[in-house]
Image 1: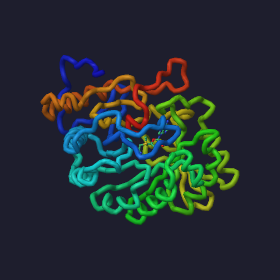
Image 2: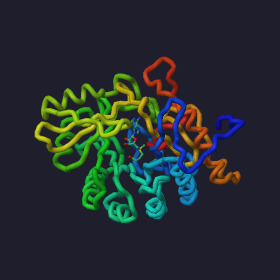
Image 3: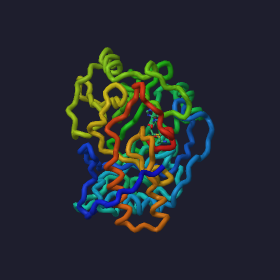
Image 4: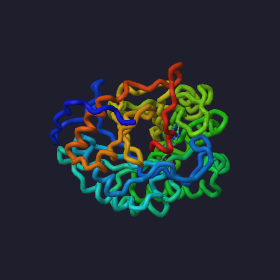
Length: 345
Ligand code: SAM
């Protein structure tokens, strides 16, 4: 459902910044280019393959992304669903590589993937202009991994994908692991070793209530403090200073300085006050928060013939209404209308 349009639209100049009503500057755009996925991770999907929402033409994503960039977006992360399934991805990255920010800088282009097709695609993605990749990997033990993805042979493919990405220079290479008690919390120490051996930044993510089914409970969440305590017992950690205010991960290195891990704790240590993100779904709706109850139909306006200035004004107006914070764990918490795979993680 789109929000009501204001009577007087803000004046948008090329140098405008996207700032919300809480004073946060928005410079990070996540774009889902499909909600199809070739994995059926047990904590994300109910088990059915298939798209639920329409996809836009690649040229339409490009036009919308350029409009966001004209307003001050500096970083674009392509996601899904599984973005490597999307035909036209390489061409989209080639085009984005030529886009300049209002200050003349290069757009930072990143991608989040399950890594299944990365062994083949890492080099072409790098050549097209992709800067960095984050691979989702929820276990370092092959049988545990494949129990989660529900795809036989997926572990070997993802490890090959990680190595191909590193060889192609898609670095620093991040590997994200969503921890869930009783599913993969036995993997914490193994991941700490994996970070060191494979020269990747492993980031543990607290499980959020964004699944298609109903799995989430407060008890299933493995908290930041528990993760730190468990790694410290086998490999003492040293905290690293944040590089920027909007950094979501608490970063640590090991006592000998080799390797890095990060912990993203949206549940137990929410970082909404420093949020710099906005999302565009595969069907062209703006979501101002993962947990938004409303969506804003940017593509609908484009299809109706609005020009770039009108679309920019709509984005500025929409960002103004960004939620102050999420309400996970509170009595008034409502799950969003879309689950993570259909929003774009
Ligand atoms: N297919 C790509 C991938 O696997 O990275 C991109 C989409 S996936 C939805 C993006 C990220 O969201 C993955 O790292 C996944 O583990 C994470 N994710 C999915 N459901 C989640 C949840 N309920 N809480 C926290 N992270 C979640």
